[in-house]
Image (cartoon, rainbow, N blue to C red; front, side):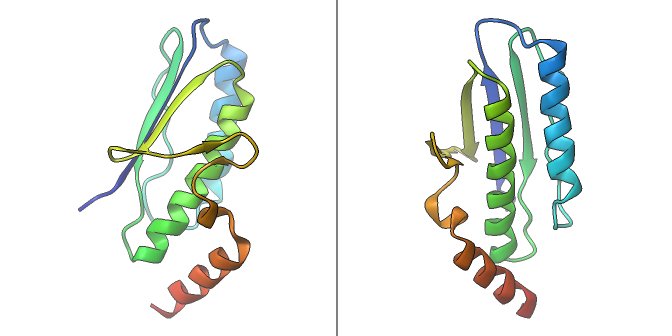
Length: 126
């Protein structure tokens, strides 16, 4: 069963073409270094005041799913920080992904370099 990450940014004022270009550039950079054979992050054509998309998390093994989600949370954190004044909704299927003003999107475990390295090492043994 596929696990999907959904994201949407809205605000009262429309996004400028420059903001959309910055968001797309950040997404492209994170897509380029995504280490899994799975869907990339995708942004739909922005509406007047929204930017949204979704992606399927890698399913090769549980480690890939966890590490892929950590990667996309970092990507969405970068995009959110580049778009001031936006309101974000990010979820894994129907469960909201937490936001922390200092750390960004995700859970503390996804930002623990020791745990991430251990999961990467365990994944290489699968």
